[in-house]
Image 1 (cartoon, one colour):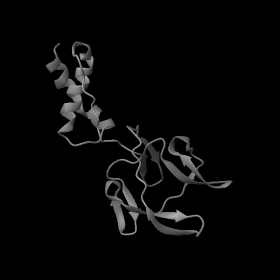
Image 2 (tube, rainbow, N blue to C red):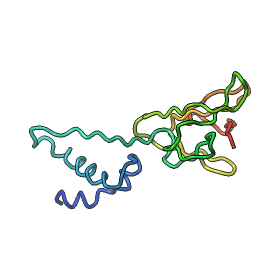
Image 3 (cartoon, one colour):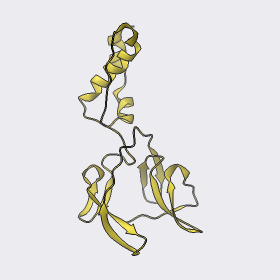
Image 4 (cartoon, rainbow, N blue to C red):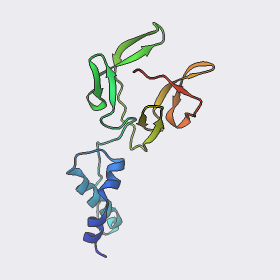
Length: 147
C-alpha cells in the first residue's frame, strides 16, 4: 500500500464535510495530510493555512436582509430585532470566523435548519426571551424566527 493508493482513496467528501473551499484546494489539502505522516523525514514541513472556515451557518443559508433574502456569504446587513425599540431594524452583519465546525440540524415543523452547535438563537421561554446556543436547545424551546 503506497502513498498513491492512500491519496486516491482519501475521500474528498470527508474533507468537504469540514472544509468549505474551492474544488482545486482539496488535492493540496489531501497531499498535506499524507505528508504529515512523513514529516519526520523532512528538515522542515510547511504550515498550511486554510481560509475556509465553516462558521455558524452553512454556505448558501438564506438570511433576511433589508433587500430580501440573500445567501449568508453575500450578506453585509441583516434584519434583526431591536429589544429597545421593539422593532425589526437593519443592522450590520457580524460574520465570525469561528473555526471548523460540526453541523447540527434543528428539526422544526416545516423545515430543518443547519448550524454550528455554538450558533445562538433567540428562544421564547417562561422567563422571557433568551439567547441559547443550538447545542443547548431542547424540545420545549420555541425559536423566534423571522419569516
